[in-house]
Amino acid sequence: MGGSPVRLGAARIALGLIQGIALYFIEGSIDSRLESATAKFLFVPADIVVLSVPFIALFGLGNMRARTLFAWMSGATVLLSLLALHDRLRQSVDPGRSVLLAEHGPSTMLIGFVVLGGFIMQAMVTAGDADRRYIATYPRYFEAAWKLALQIAMTGVFVGLFWLLLWLGAGLLDLIEIRFLRRLTQDNAFVYPATAVAIAAAIHLTDVRADILSGARLLIQSILSWLLPLVVIFVGIFLLSLPFTGLHALWRTSHAAVLLLAVAGVTIALVNAVYRDGAAGGAASSILRIGAAVGVVELAPIVAIAAMAVALRVGQHGWTVSRVLAAAAVLIAACYAAGYLLALMRWGLGLRGLERANVVASFVTLFVLLALLTPVADPARIAVASQIALLKSGRVTADGFDYKYLRWQGERYGREALEALAADPAGDGAVRAGALKALASTGRWEHD
Image (cartoon, rainbow, N blue to C red; front, side, top):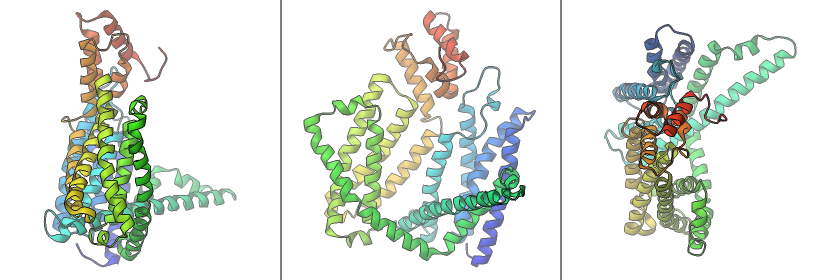
């Protein structure tokens, strides 16, 4: 979709204003005491759609054809609506309250996964439209993803500075007892539209000044690429020390998998900072190319140890929401590790197969996120089923079972499981008592 910078800017500002006004009315409607639970329920998908879909247009205007943009926005609207409905229906509720009147708004997990999945899809659709093909060339993906990431980062800085100046101005006027700006910045009727317009303006400014983004990208990639040797050294010391220290100290921690996955993520990012779009990677210095190759070799054992850490915890204590999410992250990291290792084995320091590995891993990430946001692999559903199985098998005693975990982190599945335990006439009395106490609790960490 083409157009002059002025027209595109006006369109983005108008879209931002409409989005801000819509969010104000939607949030106000959800917060209000609506008589109809169904009406309140229907505002949930509207909330996530209005919060998310306009950004597809804001980033897509001027960067993809109108028909592609319309198709992408339409598909996203349908998918987000369905995911939001599931997100609402899975949430836990208090006794006597309708499921439709549970805590309003999309969950943190839904918002986080939509942001990540939306970023990947926006870059893929933009690149595919530019190449006029479903699977774009890797340089297109690389360019689209980096541009989008930098636009988001700079937009965040712009909006932060915008509000900082408003608060400074309000404070300055307060000194002479002029309060209108202070009251304005505290009124949601101003906050929502003003923030949305500021975001739209920032996206437009970063879109029309592609030269600034290009320069920033090269600078960031250069800085990141020279951090890779440092990470490679630290990881190398860790891996070479394991035969002497063993894994027992690692297993005693409760965060080994998370830390190892973070190291894997950093390694993946830094290897890509060296490789870039493929053409630049071949021109990198020998130190950086060797560092990237060593980083690829180290990635496999790091991911393998993270998988062992998750498997060990699951074997000991069953699945929990955090362990399901960690297992999903391990699966994604394993795709990168396997693809990178194959590229190294085939192409040596050139790592020419990294492009295919990155594209495949991106699709895997999308499928994993979709599974986690649906009943297919809902973390709460899996966790509740696992914990109940441990209890019924006798591996966890009635006194040692964490009933409150089901109540406060098992969402609707946990509550239903507790209700079933409490209502089972043939069940253990201690189990029924524990379930009833958890159902009556008012907080996860309240004293018994």
